[in-house]
Image (tube, one colour):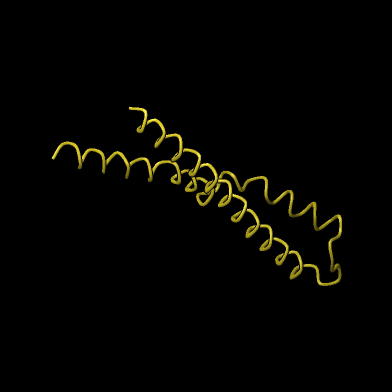
Length: 93
């Protein structure tokens, strides 16, 4: 039983780290894309201006409600289902 609890704790820690890394990566990709959109729309205002930062900040508000952001939660679900499936398959067959 102790080994199972250690497995679950290790799995949750690994999933959390992986989730945070993926979340930072996806947010940075979206931020880069928004900065490119700003540069295309406003070629006369290059660089990191306050208006550009405000545009990116306003556009990122709804990012957590997008499908891509919500699918990140599968990082917690899929490995747990795989472990439960393997445990079931090994012990009850």
